[in-house]
Image (cartoon, rainbow, N blue to C red; front, side, top):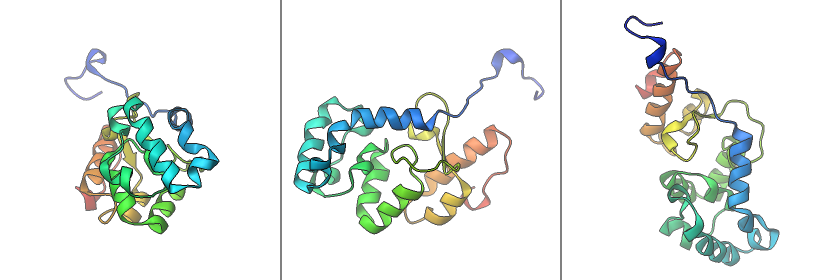
Length: 166
């Protein structure tokens, strides 16, 4: 324990269960995941607009989402800024990111690409992208904020900070 700390003022934050988050997201977005909706950009955008009033604030679609065809899994990312950036970089790059990194939306192998700390998985501050993810996607897709958040969580657990993001 650090000098001056007592057990009474320690807060323990543990990683959230990624598969439970993914299940919650797939339940919220079930209408979007129907094949007839996913196969038609017009159906996707109309269904997303219809779902919007029922979604938590962090998942409400942006104007760009509502007018630009994109993969439905992008809609499940609880970060409006990241959703818009993924749509802007185009389908090839966004599909690669989703299939390699986004374990909360896509059923891909969880190799630590992303950790969600605590229970509030809708709060993007609780997300930590791995050093490998930040190295590959940082700067042009993941902004400086994402690296700073990663370093915050690394400090909390006593891991070395990522110098490029300090």
